[in-house]
Amino acid sequence: MSTDKPSVLLVEDEPAQREILRYNLTAEGYDVALAENGDDALILVEEVMPDLILLDWMLPGVSGIEICRQIKTRKETRSIPVIMLSARSEEVDRVRGLETGADDYVVKPYSVSELMARIRTQLRRTRPVSVGQKLEYTDIVLDGESHRVTRAGEPVKLGPTEFRLLTTLMEKPGRVWSREQLLDRVWGRDVYVDTRTVDVHVGRLRKALCRNGGEDPLRTVRGTGYALG
Image 1: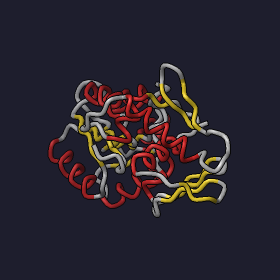
Image 2: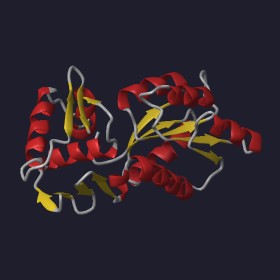
Image 3: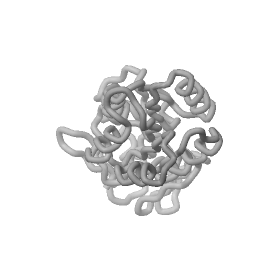
Image 4: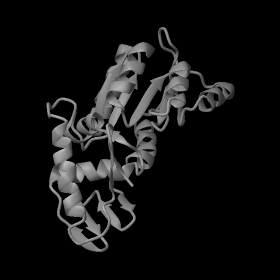
């Protein structure tokens, strides 16, 4: 999985619809994971930790509403935006979907370009760098478009891996990331890298951020991983 791309979990049991959406999501530059039913979706949410979930209401087995409820009640996954896709156009159904925790509700048939716009809106909140926004944490500023980082106004020189690592940490200040989660996000799920590699690159990132002074903003959580702040 390419780490600069936001990841989308598409949960859709209808093959033609699934393929159309997969094609369009890939064309928009997203990494796409696919699930055909609720059970597979719940497993993939834990494995992939996607940046966004496109979730069909009508699924075999566990319904989309129940999947959404489970995702939004788990501490690890509740912040992942869920866009519910449904042929149910009644207001009562839309309200039910949103009350279950869905971040948006799109009625079928829908315009693909409108759906992509809604996806970008949700990602602007959770993966701002992917849509070209700047991130700021205390005196650290990260510009996703120009790939530049400054601290207290001074440039910070980072390699590509350290830049992706800092991006991940700055997008969710305070969140504790395990080494395995950082490997997935920064190096990619399809690349085999030892978890000790994470420690090496965190060390390099710390050194770069503190080169001109200032407190170390990175926190080591013993037995778990790392957090910013």
